[in-house]
Length: 167
Image: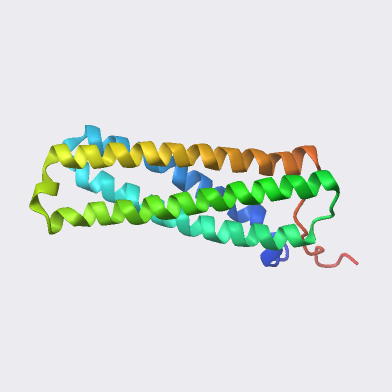
């Protein structure tokens, strides 16, 4: 039998690992798009797909995190850590939203502007996006570190429903 499903405020620990994994693996595909010229478009599209799903998951993670934060037992230290974690996570989400939209436009642009379809231009685009994604990855790492501090140092945990048969 499955355990009870947590509410929206209890989903944060389950959701948060998806955007982290998806957004941090995207640079591998950007790098492959620059190195493996024969499949450059496929790798670039794969990177975009990872960015789209990772960014969407980041929106969900921030939302579930906000809901979970409302239920957390608070001290001054916990409140300060939640505020830092929340600000860093929102910044990371916004950074990746911008990167994703810009990269999508830059991938479609060569269909309309033939000069943009040249391999050198595509490598340059991938390199610029790679640098932006790596910088965004640092923002994710900072947000994740603050989340880890909340859980492992300050003892904040998700509010989960009681197991069936438990009073």
